[in-house]
Image (cartoon, each protein chain N blue to C red):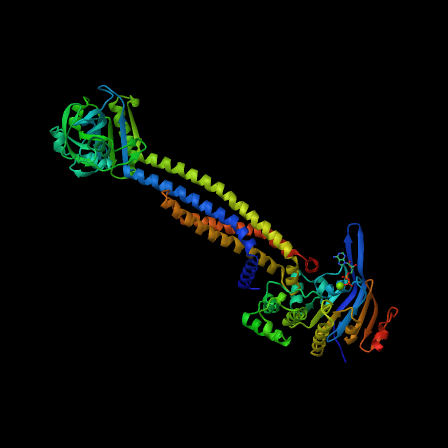
Length: 247
Length: 389
Ligand SMILES: Nc1ncnc2c1ncn2[C@@H]1O[C@H](COP(=O)(O)OP(=O)(O)O)[C@@H](O)[C@H]1O
Ligand SMILES: [Mg+2]
């Protein structure tokens, strides 16, 4: 199967300066993600997973290194070009949903299309369709606080999908949900994967990671394990995850 | 993002924070309303003054003669000659003095003016009943009199004075007309007087010199040239004794009073516009708080593709909607204020230029004080904004 690298990170470094101290959270991370791949990123808390994800999602810029998305160098893009990438190529799903509280579910979902300048009629069709797909057809006019956590996350997924992005990024999407709704949401991701979306997902849950096609482990800002498809590649020492996969 | 979407977005977030929006608006509303109302009151005062003065005539020149003796005074005939100056439509010489007026047992000291029939047209003083003093009265030195409403009230109470005979310094005069009520002007009451034919008045007051001459111009545009000619004529007649007379231009007075009241109302409006400025700072304050409070919202919007200019537009439009609404409410409030002021006797006249100006001003304040917070919001990096809580 010939696969196209949709995302390519080359020696990405992220450094924070806090007064005299500098903190390097990503230490020359290189990574390729192929079109249609379902990748899980695992690792201990504070290891730099979210930092990496934010760079992939064009929410943050690396201190050093090159980031190429869909053949274009993101590290050389202007503010407006980055906004366009976020709007058209990437759907971001957060642990705490990040819905706008004054807007209804419908208005939240159509917002990316508003920023794209799409006419209202077309927006309505797409947003309603997405909500219906997520099983929320009857919740269109509900405000986020009138919805359960699982429903809110489904609204957030509908919003991420509304702009029909090729890449879906999810930072611990089930972290704020109970096990049962977490499983439902994961089911949605698997379905989206089958539809051909490229999915990168951060998780603490080994069960969730198991569902993914590839797994990346980050420890202390370094990729310590990379398992592709059925073939595990282990640049660092294994630490029991593999055992989990074999179960 | 389309502009109309931006307005809707701004409107939504304003609606979501009703109390805060109202408090912000209050400052601008008070500012706009007080500027417009104060200017309207100034306009009203000016208009009232103008109307009062126009009643006296803006095409009127008056000469007061204070000199005595043959050289420094003007006979009735000489005064009438002044009417032949270029551009003069009519002339009204007046002899005046005080007499003792008596009717039955009532006795008052009153001003008597000896006049000619032209007085009515030149001074715009009419009768409400009876007849005016005629040329025949003047020619035959008839002992007839017109009476002001004030004096009539003192002497006759509620009884009709027309047709009655009174005594002026012991001479019997017949009252032939009752004057219209004049009200008071800067010089005091205009209703406490008696008017007689100038020939009779000259004998009654034992003087040949006229006290004042009123000249009515054909057109109030050539007042200055008439005044100049008059000045020359009088200097010649008075042989350079310029202190013997005094020329008084009604239009100048109107001008002076108008400009004084304009200055006053503009000063007040200036002070009131400081409150507009304070209101603007209030908007900036609220918008800054709002940017901080809504940092996460900005982050979310950016994460789904909002550009810097979308965020800028959103916050700027919020400031503009707030200031625009405040402008509208301020105009409405000042309309109400003008209505009640006018009803309670203080004329307040709203003009479109004031309304437009304060409206534009409140919009300008919205832009000026909205741009800084809006710019701040638009510059936030998505990660930093999302991390904020
Ligand atoms: N804006 C920031 N300023 C300073 N340090 C930060 C900032 N963002 C993240 N960090 C630090 O970078 C490290 C990695 O954070 P993160 O990527 O969120 O970890 P993870 O998602 O794996 O738990 C942490 O030690 C965190 O404190
Ligand atoms: Mg994290």
